[in-house]
Image (cartoon, rainbow, N blue to C red; front, side, top):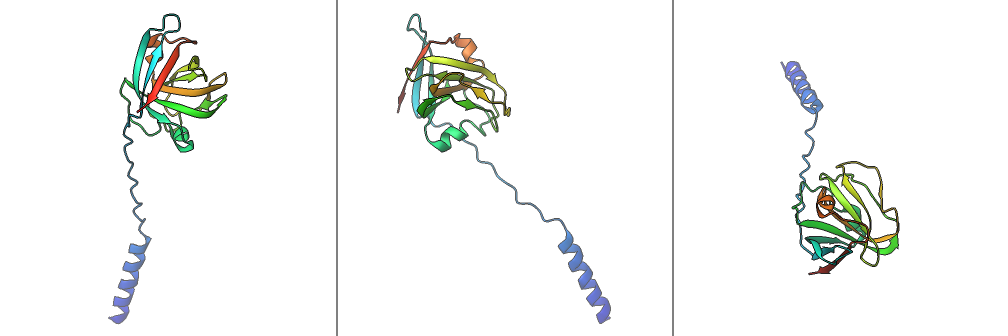
Length: 160
């Protein structure tokens, strides 16, 4: 009887220890929009306002490398302004970015230098500024077309 009990205990221990461990569930935190400034876009030829946005400002290395990653959506009147310490060619990609975006590349004089419309979610293809820039504005895809943005239009922004 002792032998049977011992074998039963060993069998139970072996079966329960061989079960696949339940992996820890990773909980993701929803990233909330935090209004850090206001941005206005002006038509080059008339200086008339063609768009106004509440913005988050990405000006640290972490913020500029993370951008709008892991966001599920963004309201139409919001965007993210990247402020770089240098004027240089900058390239973006959409890794871990779930929403389609327009990228507006802005020179040091606050004029639109180029833009990339409708960047596809999760696409890791580089999207280049094509010219040296200091700022990049990310907006929901389709906003550039809706506002009829053109190279030479300008922006202004203020931190709050």
